[in-house]
Length: 177
Length: 434
Image 1: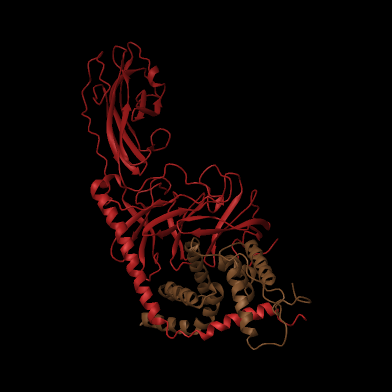
Image 2: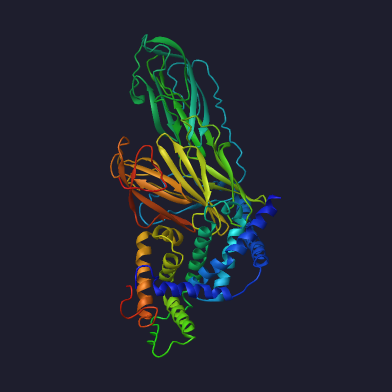
């Protein structure tokens, strides 16, 4: 009975957490297929330990750490094959009337810029500013020091703003630095 | 833009994340369940391969395949260099090895002037009977009796005792009891005959047992020269071989751990010699790990005090647990991390952050006088240490260092922070400055 309870409980958790963790996985990977692979790999890792994880205050926090850990190991294995783009083309300044497809263009630009970031900078920016974790929580998730979190977040955001300068995402004047 | 408006970049990030909602996947559980099954099968193959290799090696020469006893202190961790682990290997069954009894033949008084051979032949008026026994994996208790008669000065202080008794281990002098050094036994003509019967208990002479490097066969020699009627020194000794083997073990603690992260748990028993006559310590400790399929390995542990379980935690968030254990005693605690890496079990020692000469404790007073404390918080391993002696009566600023565990190695990492400790507040949830 206990095993069945655990499986049902885990299935409920997967159903409930899937959408939000998929969004995180997408931001971490920049690719929907890879995001789904990452999420499923994390669930596979956690399911055998669900009896214990379900009692954590925030099971999502553990899933986050597992996803980042898996992502790091994938990145290390793919280093030799992955082609990193050093210079992302700047977005063209917006002119003329707003276009319905602008939001799509912006998203593509942001996605490109995000994918161009080094893995650690991308992870730090996503956890700090999208997941809204504290620096300490981010450090815990990434398995690094506070200093490393600060450094990666700062560099990552700066790079995004540089790449997206001139777009509505980073206004030329009056924007927050 | 006022402070209440969200940074457009961050809003766009949120919008981008939500674009993933359009990627409909359906029920993930069948894929996840299948993935867990595959993971278990793969791990079973990996562990089975290690077991097969170990069994093959065991068949070839099992008696030497005992875990290597630590003769040097474990490496000091205080830098980023991770410790070198000692892998657990399959052992032959560890039957207790009993030492043989001494069996010298007592002889009658030997005519004066006769010098006995100095090798394993009791030939004089003083008979030596010894009964060496293995006390621990590195100690021999030596009880022996010397009785008979010799010629010496009648001295109430000396009566009942042989003039000189020496103990040698593999030919090397261990200790001497007597009123003169062995080479300086002086006999005088016309001395009186003295009869004696003296028994020496296991803690010979200095109140200590005979210490040996570890399991093996050793030669114990007892020399008890005496004076004959003619006033000559008569050599007198017996020797006996003693085998110190793998001791009979008993469990100090046990638990179950999912080392592989596949939902099946291994049984773990922490073992040390059953007979620990010397302050409850032993340099021989192992973790016996038994898998669900019955395969068993033994992993040497660090620390000389009895080892107990701290907790099983996933230190590196890979879905598999590591087992943290500690060897606790009067002079501190020594923590180790037991883990499985590619089918092989390892014990990784942690150490304090001080500059002790050797074997710094994970918790306790270091050789430099400072204090170190190791603990678990939210599934993470942490250590704080003082720079000088710790005044427990007052709040003290200490340096807090987290530990990083990656597959097969552990070491201090990252940014240290300063926190405040008191005697009542040594491990905390919310670190504060003093």
